[in-house]
Image (cartoon, rainbow, N blue to C red):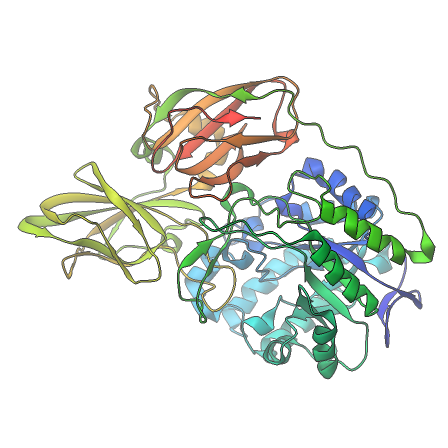
Length: 586
């Protein structure tokens, strides 16, 4: 057991000054079978601490129903075994380019912009969740013999709001739950962010990718004493579907890190190892000053151009950071060597796709109940977090052909008129999207709407998904909308997936495709889907995440622990148009 405190100018461990050399690694973006390797890579780079968020929505998919709620505790134990301290950022909001910023869809659907405020109903849910989560943290604090040295209050709150009553309430509740290690906040080094996000008596830290001296000077205006820390040193960045890849020159990143350290500050490298947005958990952003522009969904890979890449390999940035961090080891201790590299797939193999079912048959077996309402229900109304919803509505007739459109589309719809595909609509920045060809009545219309990820940052957090307005024929709303959801969580039931009525595959179709890989030499691999348009992939029941032909991501990472020697099963849920070539594992 030890005592970690915030001193007048330094962090102190048993009254001895220490510098935190931390790196972000999110346990939920790394297969648990690879935690040990990735943590050892952080230690080999010269870090003495690991930082992680906690995504509330991953662990509480429905109110009161917990899923793998003990994962954080297991990860903290793994960190201690690797010789690392731990910084925990439990939220309730985390951003992290994660679906809905980590807030559950059932919470934001009911409360909207009341979340992240002093609202009593919101706080009651937060306290109930923290009551389940925080005992794992409290039991593993450094003063109880564990690795946890600091815990965050909210996350970058100054980028969102100014409710000091809310922040002080969270601070008091964390203490009431038994959190005894230092608390902190983190915000951009700007006046409005620090005034909105700081809490009196709680250490404030700053987030930036460069300009350390200027950033810390701003921080000092609000916090004249105490240790300086960059809680998020952005050494890379995340990517969006349909955009160019984002990279940062390794030498430039190393120079920025060096500037932080030369200021005498502690640092948390964001990300040290990014990992992967498995199972469709990627978030999204919106462009524009008030974040009301085009939706920018985040890709499945969270490589982040980090020093340890998505596959756990050291990059040029890793070696430059390691050389620099070696100069700041406590007592001049030598750095440990790198752990053994993970196994990789022995030889490339194509999948043998032998079965297919159209989306309507998949929905019939795996979908939720159908409901009819005057206006379209949202994903939140139907209890769907990640996945898609089929909306059905009738165009009365006889009537001449008019434009058929949707208001408030979130985010992408494949439209069928009388069973024939009529086009694809994107929500975009406008509030209205319409088919190119007009539609005459009577006609039966289906709109298969997919959420591309809920907004994770800014004033549009808590934005609902689905058809949030209505379906229009000319300027007339079409009422009596039937809706049925298909959640990605439904595919966790392999027995139910097996009950879908399959037939021989059809190229160029949408639906669920099934096949197998024959693997020799199981290990880390990449999966490509040449010619396929957009959807999700499962290998042996493990969801690798979303693929999309718009790029820039061209393959999906397959963790070695997911594969096995011999026969491996693959499912592909294609939402627009399958390719003529089979998926390829390499």
